[in-house]
Length: 293
Image 1 (tube, helix red, strand yellow):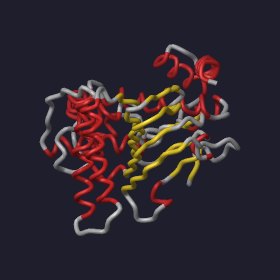
Image 2 (tube, helix red, strand yellow):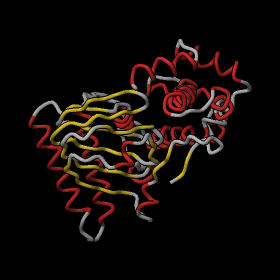
Image 3 (tube, one colour):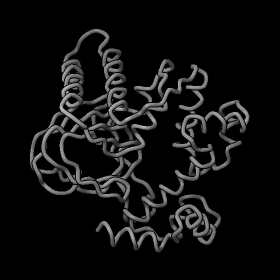
């Protein structure tokens, strides 16, 4: 486990799947209970993608300062570095899948837009019994493969998870027809990985274009064709979201957050944050804490 803003006494824990089970890039777990594990009740981040299928019952879930009261059947999706916690002790029956950033995505993946659409959401309600049965069928096959030690296990799991995600995205009304060739696919994935790693220190599109050996114009056009946003918008959104997370979940001062996000001073940070949210950091912090706490 590691922490962010380590110079501050109030930290946001980060749970790493590989630290729990070394050498593991994919984990499945089934749960059925009313008791909430203590660590889940504390705001924390994960380093991996996580999909939880709520088959029965209800859970209350906070993700990036938004409260979700989720009733079965539904999918709950978490992306790396989101801040989340669960509250309450209601009955629930769930299947959980965790996998690393690098494990699933391959050169042959052609529906990046559906992937983006799906993991851009926190909750996807399952609309009817047919979809529920379909998702459970894939989960049961995956779980049976996961608990056994058979040849080509990792490859089978990757393919099953790819199919599961495409079915879930289809359920979430992902109707995009956008396909990319392998080179475009690689650039989009690498841009996302690079921005995840460097958005705190690197904010210029040209720097990412240099890393990817393309022109800034080509990178912007490609990113916008898939996400509907420019590369700069995605970089700025990551910085804004990180600021929101720390303002809501932590007890860091605005000056500390500005320094963490590498702004020249807190006045510049205030202007940047207000431009993108319509609120000053202090007002956003007060409003969200009053609303959700």
